Image (cartoon, rainbow, N blue to C red; front, side):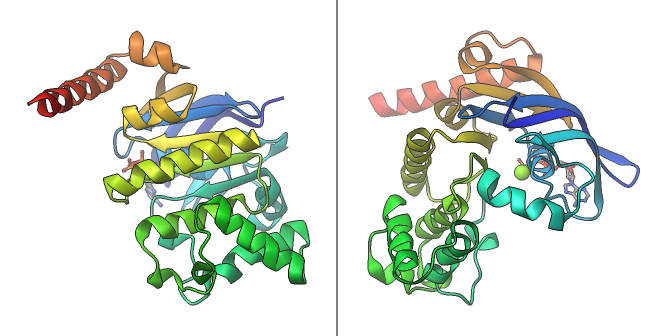
Length: 264
Ligand SMILES: Nc1ncnc2c1ncn2[C@@H]1O[C@H](COP(=O)(O)OP(=O)(O)OP(=O)(O)O)[C@@H](O)[C@H]1O
Ligand SMILES: [Mg+2]
């Protein structure tokens, strides 16, 4: 049984179809990427996968998360599933953080709720969670989100997402809002944590180079449909769909431009 099994998922906003018949799955411990141009339905698909679609959008088809059907279930019914099974990290870390709560307390919350930790054990777990995302400074726990840099905030958001030890992490453009120099560090961190814990990863990005580095298999979306799916080597080495070929070609052009620039 797959950890995430999406089958004929269609998402509509009124009469408008945003995502049409999306089907793919992700096994336990597997890393899968979704790539596609802006508006192709990557975020809508990933939100639907966790039952987090806004009220204005309706999903049909099936999404099974660790065997449980997500489509058509209420937010309240899904909440217990989300903590230990699947968590999401968004592009903008501030969406995940409470601006008025010190970050230590925000990390403590899921540790208390899902792992039942209290008192000294809870305080220790918070320090450990911060150290795991390379924020060992005790001052960070006492800071408010606005007192941290963008990279530090995203590390805190990752710590919160991972606190309940989910088996699947969905990361929707987790480094797009960050400075390039900070991006690499956050990607390294995500890669290490996912590998060490044997977690499944659904990694969304419009950047083929970044996706190829993070995952084993890529789902290519265009205009709300999956146009191609395969192992990274096949998608990059022998793309079948013209849109995928164009993505690979533009990544190549950029790469050789960077090479040329570097050798001057
Ligand atoms: N709440 C909503 N109501 C109506 N339409 C929406 C809503 N959210 C997204 N859409 C539409 O659904 C389509 C897919 O959007 P989605 O956010 O999934 O794209 P994306 O692939 O994540 O793009 P990006 O790379 O820019 O993040 C777009 O046409 C978008 O305008
Ligand atoms: Mg998006």
